[in-house]
Image (cartoon, rainbow over all chains, first blue to last red; front, top):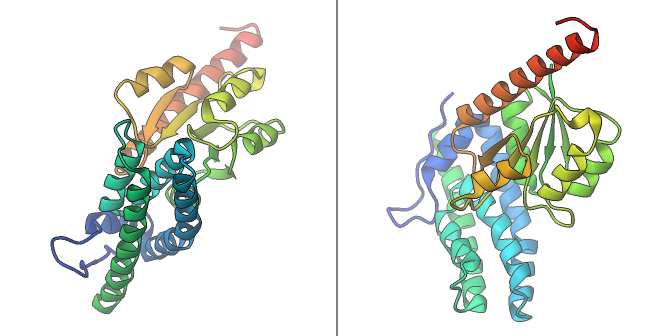
Length: 125
Length: 137
C-alpha cells in the first residue's frame, strides 16, 4: 500500500513530506515509524554532544556530529536541519554555538512536525 | 543468497539498509570499523557496504585492512558517504573502493543496480579464478 502522508503544517514546514513517502515505499508504515522513533530517540545525545563541543570550541567534534546528523536528517526529510548541518560543516562557519542552538530549536520543531504528520496520516489510513 | 556486510555507525542508516536489502540478501551489520575488521577476519562476505565516516577507524582504513587479505581481494567494497563533495567519487575509487554511493538513499534502484552489478562481476571473476586454478581456461 502506498503511504498517504499529509503535511501537518503549511508550506514553511520543517520537514519534507516526500521523504516520508519514499521511506514508506522502501519499507512501509513500519519503516517510517521505526525511522521516526529512532530519529527522535537518538537526537538528545547527538545534540548534547554538539552543544558541549561547541561550548568547548571543539570544531572537529561539532563537524563529526553534523556530518552524521546530515545523513539522518536528509533521509527522514528534516530539510532545515540539513541546511544547518551544511553550515556547521562549512569552512566559513561564523558562529558555531549559535548554529548548534539553532539546530536544537529546529530539531524540536521537526520532531513535533513529524509526530503530528504521522498522527494525521494514521487518521487518513 | 549472497551475504552483504554493512559497516555503518548510524543506527537509522543500518535500519534503512536492512529494510531495503534483507529480502534479497543475508545481512551482517557492524557498527564500527574495528568491529568490522575483527568480525570479517572470521568470514568472507560477498560484498561490503562501508561507510566512510566511522568513529575510531574510518572507512578508508578499514578498506586498507580488508584489501590486505587474500580472501577479500575479489570482494566488492562499496563506499557509502554523506555530504558528498565534488571529486569525492574519483578520490574514493582511487583509494580502491569498487563503487561510491551517497546518503541519504533517494533512489533504491541505484543501490540495487550497483550491488547487482558488482556481485555479478565478482562471481564472474571468481569463476574465472577457479577455472584458472584448476588448470583449465
